[in-house]
Length: 588
Image 1: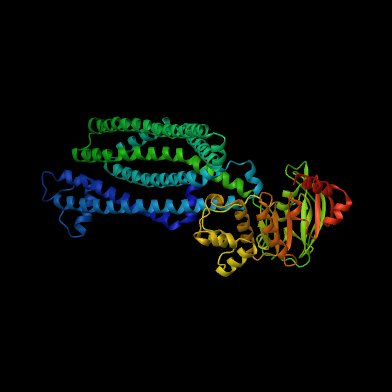
Image 2: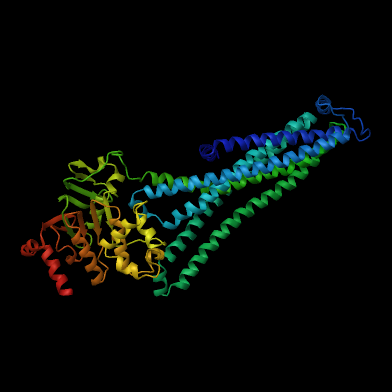
């Protein structure tokens, strides 16, 4: 609870202060309004001039006469109505303040959590279900906002209840003390927060399972239809949705059952206190009536307070899930010890005795030594599992070497600002991801503020202008989810254009032409040839025709550099590359 309040204070301290201040003012007005009941009852027989018979009535009499008003029932009733109207206005203001605070906190927590996910190592997502992460960002943050509302409303109600007890003590301190003891003992004896917290945690688990099922099957909708899995997917999601609904219903039913119990208990407590007051303490009639009205107003507030606390306990696991995932992701953020040190490439990129292991035991790369001079085109080939993708991750600084170093003009890559380094790189991967937006937006997002002419030039260099001009809406054509509305070759050409818009010094292509038809591949290869000497081009490829014109070709085997040289040199060598080339020639 306190940690959640700290989050609210961090985001909007003045809103928290305003809420507490409004709550205290509301409690004050409520207390004064309740206090007015006592002299009103005392003045039933003499409404035009009330004689105060109780210490609380005397205090109100002193105030009313001090402001120059007659101490009559009419004045007291009108004063009560004014206080009630003002209190209602303050309650509305308080409610709007809490809702605005909730919105501010949800936006901040959601943005912070998403930023943590985006900044973390790519490897973090290998053992995470995306549905769990998206559930945390969307639904569990909403439960966090609900938990905050419950905390703030409980704080407000607690302040109001405290005000009631102050007025009760002024009427009869004996009855007020007895009521406090009964409420504390009864509340402690019937507390079931542990069980409700378990139910709240089950809601989080069930929601994550439902979200994961939806994300996984919808993202593979083509395979679902092609394999005839529609009924299976529907049944699986329906089961997950049913479990989520049952857990949520169970928690609400739990709270409702205890609310009913507290309401029944409130009736018994009220009757007991009135009996003690009249029969044992022999409190005067006016004070008894005032105390009865106070208990009548207090009882639902106590029920509400307990209900809010139970709702908070039920919603709290949502916030705990958000905190857990944020902490977990933050521990996986790529370190940036060279922050502020701008990166540039003047001479070469050198891999010096580089080794890398995912599990700390088996090296995927081992003893790799490689020099990539500035302005050259380098091809990297090898069978699956040879370490090509790992090498790409290291060059992008998505991971760091387990041992050895990558040097840029002699400086360890880890000593350069990671964002500055990545700004030098234009990257195109095998699985091209386009957003459900226009072609123009998909290209411009690579370099915000880029001019339309620069976009056109990059599209032309990538061989994409011809097909873009044929589209009905041209650059404003929406490409669909993951670019589903255009062909694979068109997606790759747009990806290359998106990389070139950055004006990179290094162009890194990771299997960028492996799934293309021969025409699309030829267009991209021609674009790469035109960049020769102007950019440092690193091409990771299965198709050897893609790297045939490279200045140097590196053949990897079992995480090591097996051989290197030009195409002709490697063919004459008769090693791994020559075997690859012979196999590819036979298959074609």
